[in-house]
Length: 304
Length: 306
Image (cartoon, rainbow over the protein chains, first blue to last red):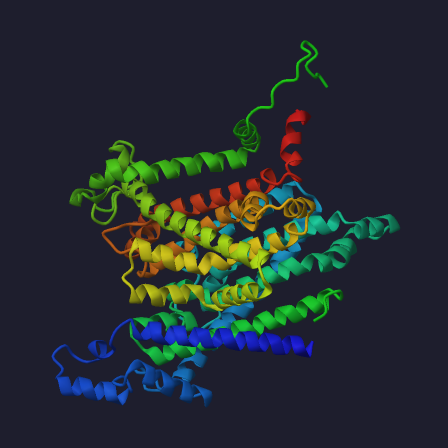
């Protein structure tokens, strides 16, 4: 187990380094911040001074060396736009995204597992067909479209919930519902498929023959064995939520890390972009390791 | 069981495409999906040729014209947009860009991913390790954000969009292919081919690839939907296709300011996206069964029940 974790940590570190190198040079290529932050008629001297202030006048490779040196001390540099440490801005936004992702995934997992198992219990039945149909639609719908349609219906016409921002519990309802739909559709399909296989296996037939009732058969015998592929997909979707809630966060004006990242890219606030990508990537790595450990917990045959 | 009593000859086996069509006919959902997708593809190929002009012609009297007004020209049946351009014609024309980006990205990533997957599955351990780590790196990237950075750096054009989306999807095909190859290479027919002296090239392309291919096609169908949604999201955020070119995602974004008084501007192109991805999902589900020799009986048996 320990050597496995070590291996994973090394592999993750290599990926992380590649990510930092790539994003560092890619983001510098998007343009010069001075043209964005200084007025059009700013003098050459003031431009030079601005570059010097933010360490942008050295050759790229020197800048990179300095950045890596700071990074080792976990110093992500100052944000150009916000004049505060980049990491602070990112962590503040990340907490919002994390809350959103955790609540959404908890709801999705619970709903998809229960409904998917019930659908698999009677394949081709009415409930199965309804569940399959709606989960397919859910998996096919573009989230930005659902978001704006939901705003028109529930915020503008019915006036039940606020259109955007944060503040009260009500502000969370629309973003969570919109983020809920796609992962729910996908995971329900996977649960259903893997439960159908599990329910036709020999140990379920044995349990039936012993006279075990339906509910324990579904939720104790079959579900535990059907969970492995489901967990993989849950992990994928959670990762997608952590870095891909961009669209929904933008539409709802939610101060999460996705919106921060898009804003920072458009404002050429390189330090914030890098810090945000770094934090998200670390979160995703940690989650992947957690999922591998979960595998071993659920299936004692898997040993690392 | 009325097996040809009137003649002693064995009827010829019908050609493969005919039996596939018959299977498709029996699953009405998949049939609708296939028909809808055919229509969309035809729109994408021929639409811009005939409707490009009309889709770009402003008409200030028809600004935000409401949909379902059948007294007008058919192009206005879904209403007009903020500049009075016919929405239906625009949706048909936009199908081309939307389809082109998705098809390009899927073909690219499938070709490269499959190639690398075959290499990783069939060759030395070292090469396989390098390729798999590379896939891990790509997988751990926040792909949408990376696309944003790259597109912001390069100018967002159809080609760049295809390249960016293709790179993020390569690992899907790579991993599937490698996993399947690892299993297939141990089978008897591969070993027989090796014993008979077939070249590696021949074994990989004539013996292994055809077995993996159905799985890949099924994944590609599903992935097509995914890539389409990703492109729409990017265009919606304003970093995908740029006006005056149009895609469905961009049309949704363009309709956003008019949501409260002309909901159809955003709603209709969104509906086009959802129907297309839904059809792709349905078709992919059907293909999973139809292309799998072990599962195919489920579709063929239905005929005998009737």
